[in-house]
Each structure stands twice: as C-alpha cells, then as structure tokens.
Image 1 (cartoon, rainbow, N blue to C red):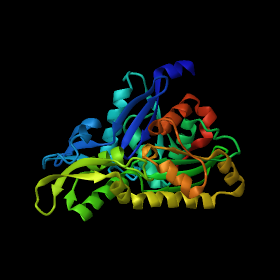
Image 2 (cartoon, rainbow, N blue to C red):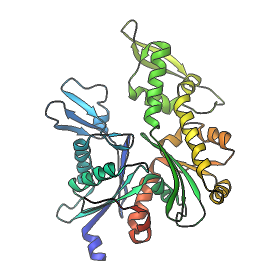
Image 3 (tube, one colour):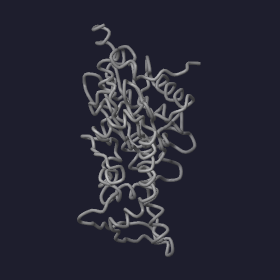
Image 4 (cartoon, rainbow, N blue to C red):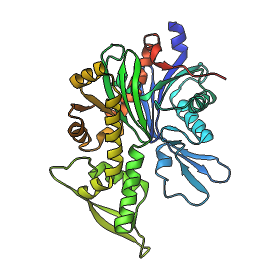
Amino acid sequence: MSLFNLVSNDIGIDLGTANTLVFVRGAGIVLNEPSVVAVETNSKKVLAIGKKAKDMIGRTPGEMQAIRPLKDGVIADFEVTEKMLADFIKRVVRHRFLMKPRIIICVPSGITEVEKRAVRDSAENAGAREVYLIQEPMAAAIGVGLPVDEPSGCMIIDIGGGTSEIAVIALNGIVNNTSIRIAGDEMDEAIVAYLKKNFNLLIGDRTAEQIKMKIGSAYPMEDEETLDIKGRDLVAGVPRTMSISSVQVREALTEPIDSIVEAVRQALEKTPPELASDILERGIIMTGGGALLNGLDRRLRQETDLSVFTAEDPLTCVVRGCGKVLEDISKYRKVLIKSERD
C-alpha cells in the first residue's frame, strides 16, 4: 500500500460555484482559484482559467466571454467544467508518468443523480482514476473537527457562492438537510437590483461582491460605514460615482438573508428532539464564504436563541474536510456517496 501511495496522487476538490479549492494528500491546500473560464465565443477555445479569467468578467470584447461553469453549486456547463477541472488537476499533479489520481469531490447535499453523474464523468474525463463524492456539509463538519461518527448531533450551516446547506449530522450521516440555492451570488444580485431600482445606477457583479465584502452586514453595526462606488447612470447613460451606506446594503440584502434564516428555522423544526438538545448544547457552526458576512452570526443567534459560531477560516473548511477523508479513506468510507453507475 505504501508504494502504491508513493506513485499515486490523491486529491480532494471543493468544486464551488465561486471558487474551486484543491487539496493534495501530504501537501495540504495547493490551489484556490475562482471557478471562472474565459473562452472564445465562436470556437469555445479556452483562453484563461481561474483568477485571470475572473479579472475579465464584465470586461470581455464580443468575441470572448468569461463563463462560470457552475451554477447554484452544480455543473451548468459540462464541457467547460471538464476543461477547468483538467487544468486544475494538471497544475497540482506533478508527475505525469505516475498513476492517475484518486479524487474526492464535494457536492451540494441536494444534488440529483444526474448531477452526480455529471460531476463524476467530468472528473474521470479530466484524468481521475477513481472518483468519490462527499456532501459539502459533511466535509465541512469533518474539516471543522466535529466528531461526525458519534451519536450526538451537530448542526452545520455552509453558505457558499451558489448554495446554502444546513445539515444536522450524527453517526456518519446527514440526519436532515435543507439545501437552498440562495447564497453569496444571490446577495450580489440583490445589491445590483437594489441600486438599479433605487438609484438608477447599474453596477457589475464584481462591484457588488466588493460592496458586500467591504460594508455588507446582516445585523446593525456599531459604526455604520459608507463606500464610494462607480457604475453607469441608467438615465443619463454616463458613468457616475455615488456613496452607499452599510444601512442601505443591509436593506438590499434583506431578502437573501431572510431566506437563509428561514431555512435554518425549517431545519431546526425537522430535527429529532434528541438531536435538538445536542444542538442546544453545542450550538450551530457556520462555514463557507457567506459565514464571513458581518453580523450574520448575531442575526442567527437572535432568530434561533442558540449559540452560533463561525468556524476558523470558513472558506477552507470543506476542502480541509476532504483532506482529512483522503488521509484515512477506510475510516471515512461511510460518509462517501455511492452513486448509481450506468
């Protein structure tokens, strides 16, 4: 087995709507790139992948387009996802002549059989020897270091770019999960829509993301902030700058945040009483990029009367969980998803 490990690269991939992170066994997290691919419009030839492609979003000439091949946590563009995966795998697998890698890929818990097959086929075509799938909330719980194999329950809220996953985990399984396709991307869209409707200002998704990260919040802040933003005036048709306050951004984010809070409530209502008492004792853990939104933990605390903690380095929890599973596949075999093979 040890020789086999020497000649094989084992990889864990958190294939996210916004970012893809790759973990290589023995080396840790080796890649963290935006899930964006720039292609030539007519020939579909790939021009750039990852950060270079993200810098092109909203700035490409007619013959080029920057595509985000994953939508709401699942593959929307099969061919482009395959090219992106192949590129990322090639970047991290050093020795071409060795065996093809075993790959574990994190997928949303609400994924269908068809979507599972798409992920599996993409990874196989991109050069994997064996492909295992693991549900994101499970990987996040393992990454945070929760004892997923014990009978006591724990609750994870994983808010990514495309999906928010709320799961109660016990005995190596997900007891109940609520997966909603409302997360970081919807927050950006809400900010774009708010500025368009109230100030006739059109901004791009990248600007909306910056606003969310800099002054976005889900709960009143002690010192409210303002930010100067640039966009296009829809009435005059010329570029203009305006100042937006964190209060306005919070108002813009009301709908997506309310949906996430509602999903957490529903998940708690579906939780068996024994596990509910465990959650009362342990609290709820938030992971994913959305967990970094200012005041979201306080808002959830207020709504649920439970302790809510943000995991350390929430952006990498899922891929770190993947890494732990890779280190000891036999121990975690129960948490890997079986999928129907054709």
